[in-house]
Amino acid sequence: VASTLELFMDLAYVAALAALVHYLVGAEHIDGKVIYGFLLRYLSIFALWFNLIWYNNLYENKTIRHRIFMLLIILAVICQQVVFNFKTEEGGRFLTIAFCISRLLELILWLTSTYSKKNTNKTLKKASIFYMIGLAYSATVPLLGQLYIGQSDFIWQQL
Image (tube, rainbow, N blue to C red; front, side, top):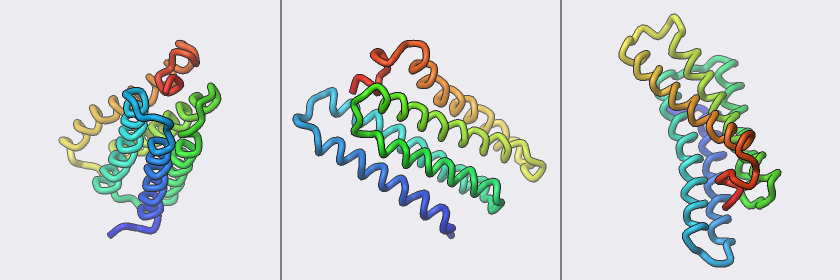
């Protein structure tokens, strides 16, 4: 049974997808660059959404800390949808930071749940370790690209 917070999370992701479709429909002409930008943004939204659904199913948690983290992730997703149509350097930087913050918050949720005393499933712990490595990688690579490569070379900025 889904909680109110999970339903609100789903609604935030649906709104993010609606903003993304607006980006695709609002394009003057649809070419490979627009489709590539759409797919890149869609996969980032879908990965965040899927990871949180998977986390909520594995570690159903009703604590205040869990709810605060979920709310912060939802706010980061809403920030991402606000800047989807911005083609400026600030918009690309803001999108990157919001994406990385949401991924790092997910990583903290996974870390604390995997290593809690309540979790006794060794197979789930091993799988979660590899999953968390992937989360950490996906959260830091775009941010490092934004910081060290520069705004003009960053992939979201070029779309």
